[in-house]
Length: 124
Image (cartoon, rainbow, N blue to C red):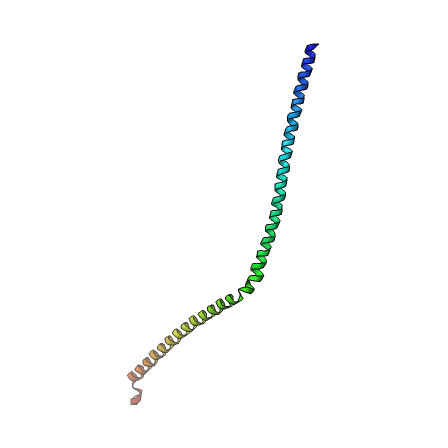
């Protein structure tokens, strides 16, 4: 009979120790889950704050900055326009000189042609 009580008490101790072990593990896991959920909530709030900052920066870059930088942009555009006009004028000047040179050459060629034909002599 003593052996039955000893076996019964040892089985109870083993079962109670298993229950305590499982309860401790559940407690530790639940604490870790709670810490993780706090971190997740904090990160979500931080994400929302960062989204708001991004929206503010986008607004600033698309609406406010061009208004302040309008004069700078206007000056840049004027400079680009002047540079284009200068390059167009240079190209136009080169074209006119080439055309004038070609006209002078053609005039010289026609003069030479008329001189060789000698149309003034009346031999035609």
